[in-house]
Image (cartoon, rainbow, N blue to C red; front, side):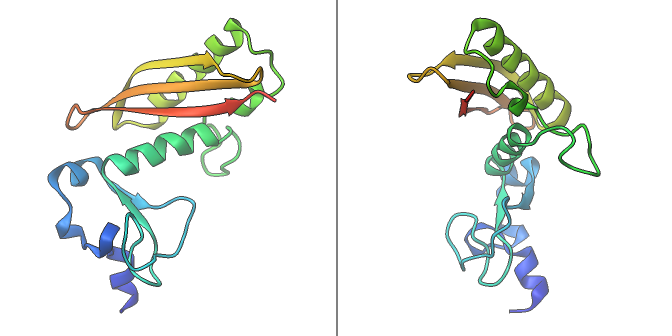
Length: 155
């Protein structure tokens, strides 16, 4: 397989023309963290190529990347990210959970233009240091709803 074929191979070994209309509108990107393709399967790409994500999976990956990134971590985008780690060692109180929800909504609004955040709920978990972050959003191009539940440990 030529290098150019590996770079254009999409989930399941499909080429760009095989994207559904919804996947094409929501975008395609390299799977993160970077992994070589496995010759098929969900997002694997072709053997030796890069793994790719498309459509709603690409948007979800972007949301997760924003949550996992601290401002200042990316040299070329110093304000990119959410800043969840600044809440490490904070008490699991309503004030902390409200601050986390506000920061997530602000970061997603700033950095993910393909969605509209409809709700960010941060609730205490079973363990004292655990909070569950439930993000509800709508894909703006097809108005399909989606959500992401993200566990975050304050300690």
